[in-house]
Image 1 (spheres, rainbow, N blue to C red):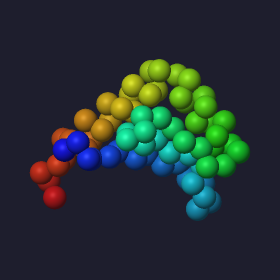
Image 2: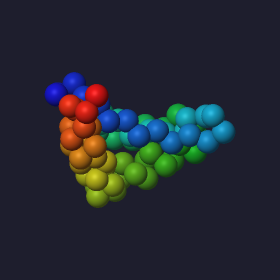
Image 3: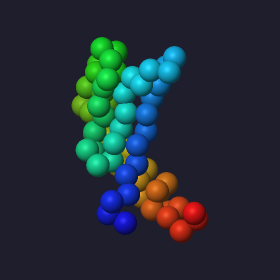
Length: 66
């Protein structure tokens, strides 16, 4: 169960702007706009804490469903 990863990607017009990865524990930006958004989200501990909790709430809760 330790290798389960939660990824939340944000795309616009088929271009990935930024994503949260539970293995990194932070947002990563892929465009100029995405880097700015990632910096903003990473500076807010409540957003990072909520996204880290999504791994337990979404991924680990649904492990046996497949």
